[in-house]
Image 1 (cartoon, helix red, strand yellow):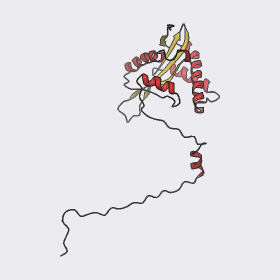
Image 2: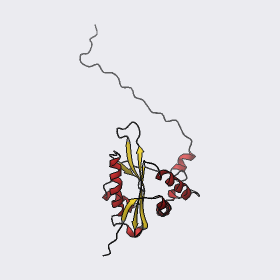
Image 3: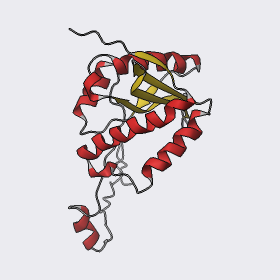
Image 4: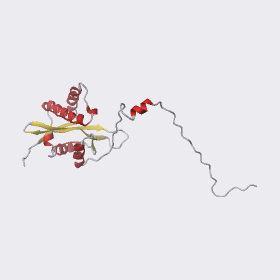
Length: 194
C-alpha cells in the first residue's frame, strides 16, 4: 500500500489560478451529472474574479490540499449572515470543494474540513452547511460519513419539460372552494317555548 502525503494549508495568492483549474474540473464533473451546471461563456472568468475578490475578505477561508507541491484539492468556506428572523446570526458555508479523483476516499476532504471547522468555531459559528447535487451519489455519501445530515431539500422544475409545459399551455382558472357553515348548537339546556 502506497502512503500518500497530503498537506492542507491556507491558500496563497499564487494558488488562485490552480484553484480555478480544479474548480473547472469540478464543474465538468457536475455538468456530466446535470445540464443545469453548464457554464456561461464567461463562467470561468467570472468565477476567477469572484474568487480573487472573496479571497481578500475576512469572511472567507480558502484551503488547499497539496501533494509534493501540486494542488490536488480545495475547499472554499464562507461566513454567511443568516436570515434575521433566526437566533443563529451567522452560518458557516462550505461553498465549493474538489479533490482530484485519484485521491478520493483517502481522507483529503476530511483533513480540509478539520481546518475549516476550527476556523468556523473561532468565528463563533455553531452550524455549518453545504449543498450537494442530488445526482452526486459519491459526494452525498462522503458528506454523510463526515456527519452532515439533510436539512432542506431544493427542488427544480424545468419550464421546457412536462408537466410545466402542460401547465403553461393551460389558462389559469379561478379555484372556488365551497365553504360549509356549521350551525351553532345550543349546549346545555334547550329553551322551552313559553
